[in-house]
Every structure is written in C-alpha cells, then in structure tokens.
Image 1: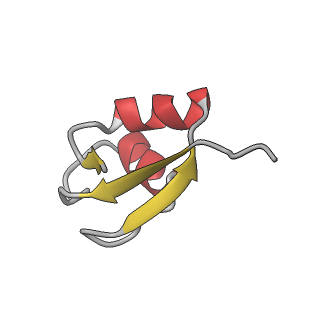
Image 2: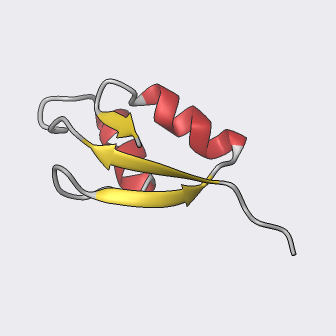
Length: 60
C-alpha cells in the first residue's frame, strides 16, 4: 500500500490586481474564492506552482 504525499493549500490573498499568469496558476491549483482550500498531490509541478504564487497562498 503506497500513500501519496499531499499538500494542503489555502488562498489567503485576493488575486485582484495580480498578473494574469499568476491568476491562471491559482486557478490551476483549483483555488477559486478567498479562503478556499485544496489538498493536492505533492509533486514538483505543484510545488513550483505554489512557489510562483507564494505571496497569495498558504501551505497548511
């Protein structure tokens, strides 16, 4: 039995007024409204997306 590592991400700052690519990244992480949370698989791609918009999200 292999457990997939996951990472929980929460949108803590509004995407209003941010770069379009950063908005697309937040949407790509599956975050919609402020304070929305998602549990995602911990892959290098997801980590890179989190790093790109680190000023908007919080890793729980």
